Length: 464
Image (cartoon, rainbow, N blue to C red):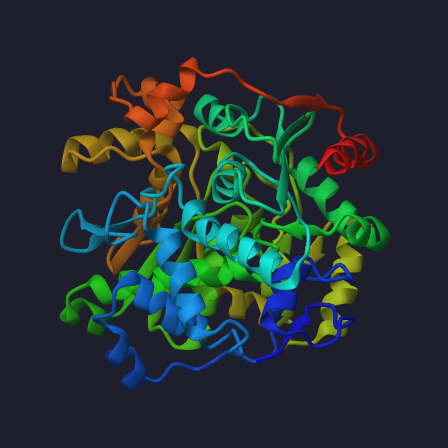
């Protein structure tokens, strides 16, 4: 298994080198040169595996034996030992056709924990084996930052800096990041939105000299290992359904803003998981819905919503899908990304629009419908969901609501009490969340720009 860049200017890399590279050195995203095909017989053999066993089976297809089997198994066991559910990602039946995949049982109560607990341990493993310093740099719209910090705090040989948009994450999301007092953690609150933070990250990784000097590594979904780790729970959730429903065909409804979570589902489908439909659920920042429905990829005005983790206009993982849409042609992918940079939009042909429609359905959920869905889910099922999970259910309903569907519950509702409270519902916080409000915060507010962030990083890394 070799890994290449979507833009074709990076030589084939192995698994660990791809992991450590994060963003391709040519500005592209790393992808497997060929995608393993899982046979029906293998799917049958996998259906009764535990979550750690299934993850080992899937990762073994990509790691080239670069991590000895026992080491990989140990990394996986350690990553999920602290999850509140022994299943890691349990599937909950709401009614005959609708299920929820609970992805919030990790330490920060969000789906990002599923990948980032493993990535934190893998970074520590790589730092030790290669005798390297690891400096992790990431941007967050809310959940990635807390999950990444949780995955590496206090680990030897690792320092982490997370950028988040100042005043544009929920209170709990902010506290989960900024109450961490470990000296290997730096939180930068950027005067801008998430797209600004993400652009700064890309510019710093594209500065090859700066990236090499400070040993920069990525935790955002630009890192392929994050995508692969998320692919596991698509397989796991599918196997948890009754056999008769699996035979009918299963759809997934996926709240997504950066196109990473749903691209993991797209990868699972290309590997051979029999997914009937991938439903892309988003909010008023609906660039991805317009891409799927109209064949135009063009940012619009940024909007703050009740689901802030999806308040994103430019989706990092769009380029990975674009690569496959362009027939796995890196030159064409690079050409289109350059056109997007220059013109701010991409328009797709009729044939491409037909392919996009075969790959995805999409629906944008406005704030009013989001809150109505939270209330309806509570009334109908006595189950409280967060605003992002509400977008997933609302999108499933809007796209027909007939298939057997697994909708992703991407965060615990306690992380978004500002929105939940608008419905009149009063919730009880878990102890881990309640205790955050009494802790001191540590963060630095910075101006929006590469230079301001680079200066903070240089001081932080020198101290380390």
